[in-house]
Image (cartoon, rainbow, N blue to C red; front, side):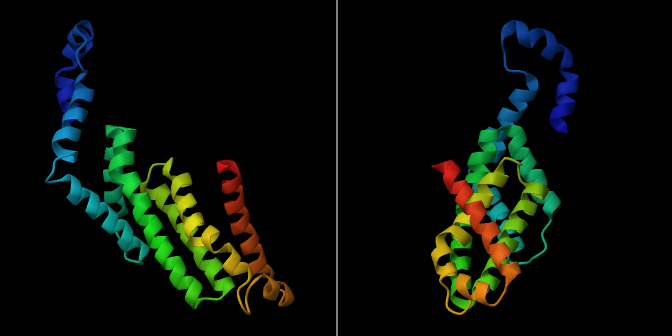
Amino acid sequence: MALQMILDILMYMDRTFIPSTRKTPVHELGLNLWRDNIIHSSNIQSRLHDSLLELVQRERTSDVIDRGLVRNVTKMFINLSSSVYQEDFEKPFLEVSADFYRGESQQFIESCDCGDFLKKAERRLNEDIDRVTHYLDGKSEAKITNVVKTEMIKCHMQTLVHMNNSGLVNMIVDDKYEDLGRMYSLFRRCIIVHMFKV
């Protein structure tokens, strides 16, 4: 808002003087100064980064967070530039997400039967798609869903299929059509992603 007010005051200069002297436009200069002096400040950068990731982690563990606040911060990153969003938020977000889902899927594989595991994996996938809708950049959807699919499903496909008393054979024998449909749907999504990556 302050930058918009400054831009309004310097509108004439921005339209006449800036192009003729090939200087940086007022809006772009303001965003660059904000990025360099605030977002990339040593006092602020790590605190902002850690706070955002902590909020996402709290939401994953069923806490209610201020999604509007997270949305405003990620929107600020996007407005500064796609590279700021990717480096300052998206990249660490994907790394932390991979660690979280790797650990959680290991817990689930040890404590759940195949049908329950698939339900939990599907729920986690839907939660992250919802997260993109509410406060992440739309381009992050494919990346975060790929992380969830890799860590929760692809890494455990063989184990799930051959799981004692609840794997594929047991699903077929016990007519568990809903679980079979879920397995097919989730496995298919992982296989299609893998084929396109190859």
